[in-house]
Length: 154
Image 1: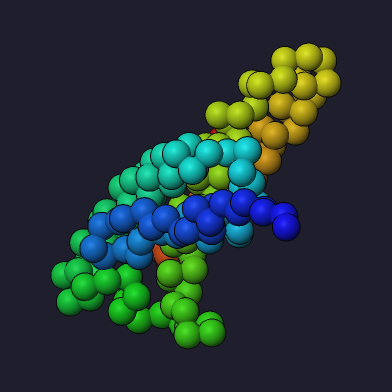
Image 2: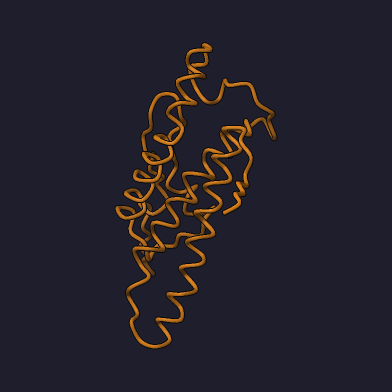
């Protein structure tokens, strides 16, 4: 007879609370959508998600206040196109928060390998972190119904 121990706690999803207007976040959904493996502890991932939702919510404060003044109590009930019964605003909100959280995690872990090859890899990660921040900006622009590109003549 062989006994194989399994860790069921790894399959338990953790929910990160949010303001009443916005949806709560799922740690497992974040890990799955943004390929955040177990090398990143739950504590670090949850901290990154909390920081990201705080920053994203602050950027959307004025927009949220306007929607609440219109009588919309949650993001899910703000009129918007839906895809597979999910509001595009929810999809864009989660993209903004998850992308920002992923960029925070990349920034935190880029300093572990300081060898020559590690430096080159850190430079590659920087552009990846920038890509995730760009995705955050685009998602917020879509929620705010603003142009995603601003061009100025200098």
